[in-house]
Length: 166
Image (cartoon, rainbow, N blue to C red):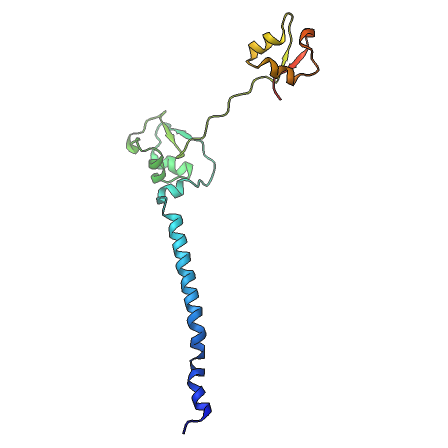
C-alpha cells in the first residue's frame, strides 16, 4: 500500500534538479553572450594591426637607418616586431635597407603641427593707420577695432600697441 510519504518522495528527490536546470541554462546563456562579444571585438582587426595600434612607449614617426643596421636591430631598439615594421613599410624590402633611408614606426603619421598664429600685438610706426596695419597683418579693420576699443583709429601714435588677436 502507498502512503502519502511515498507519493511525495520521488518529487523531493528531484527537487534539486528543478533548481539546477534553470541555473544551468542561465549560466550557458551568459557564456554564449561573453564568447559572442569577445569574438565581435577582435573580428575587425588582424593580429598585427591590433599590436601596432597600441605602442608600449612613445616612438618618433620615422627611424633613419644608420650604417650596418638591420630590420631586426631596428625592431629590437624600438620595441616593435619585424611584422609590425613590415606592416608599416609595405614597399620596403627588409633585406635591402640603406643608410639614410627613413622607415615608418607608426601605421598612421601624426598630423603636422598647426600654423603659428603670428604676433599678438603690433607696435605702430610713424605713418601707419588701422588700414595699413590690417593690410600688412591680414586682419580685417573691424576686427582690429573690436580688439582695441580704447584706441581711436584717427589718433594712432607711433609706439601704440595694437592687439591683433586674443
